[in-house]
Length: 73
Image (cartoon, rainbow, N blue to C red; front, side):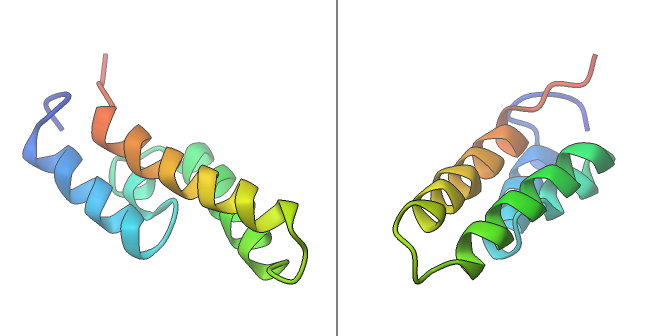
């Protein structure tokens, strides 16, 4: 991955649309991938409550943006 706006980051962001954390895993960031996957899937699993799905949706959007804006140092 060369940097922000690169083709790799676009692919990672698209992967996150389908499964949260997958884009970070594609970028090689395992801890971030696990964090996003647990928060989003946990939030969506508690759909019958009000607050957890909202938190899950915000974390899902955050994971997509995080993968798209990732810049390797």
